[in-house]
Length: 341
Image (cartoon, rainbow, N blue to C red):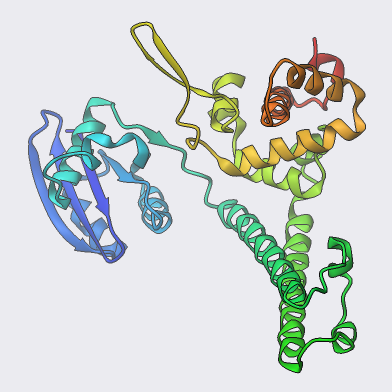
């Protein structure tokens, strides 16, 4: 007999509910987050148990453990589970039961289970982005200290070249000098950590043929190439280029009711790392590729207002994302002629 299981996963405990193929509740329990306990709970039902887990922050250990034990596991996208999150009465027991029922009906809004071998590398790359952002905040904090004493005469590059000895000769109180030196020390630490992450990812990824293909894209250098490479995962999970572009947040959503149509709905659904990578690539590409700059400017001139260039840049980013999909699917490098063909 086939069974269906919903797991409402929390930080310390999990509510587990199993139903049969007729939709009747067979067994439920609230278990500690211990893989051995959860596997023991499933033991009487054999391996013919289909399991769904809501995509929360701590799903890695449970999904990997259940898959290694031979179970069919699905990951449910939280955003698509409004039937659970929007219910008037919401409890862990109800949530687990509803997850199991949705799985039985084939109505789970499924989320991609990123391969566990590459998952730490993708997460490391995401942490790198956080370190870069933190370093940028340090530079901003440094400039704020100078502005207080009307010393904000340096360019951004000038601030980045500052040394502790330069701080020492500035006409500011000693307490401010000491704090600025602390900021420089923090910047040095963050820079060394970023370089260490870069080296580790470079050693692992640089020789991969798919990564080399990404480096042929206009505007894509090493870091953007890494972001695209690790955030996509397996390109075969996308049925076509339109689905891929939507996942990259490069396709506006539409809300239609009768004759009323509004665009822009759901703009935060999808992978924001990929949107950043492709929009940044488009920004860089227009500097070196005349055809791409002409394409971007044509779309910008069709629009009015301060957002015209931004919208046109997103259109170009969509083009580059579409090219990326076909390149990875077919295993071919970038071809500018095909981009506008």
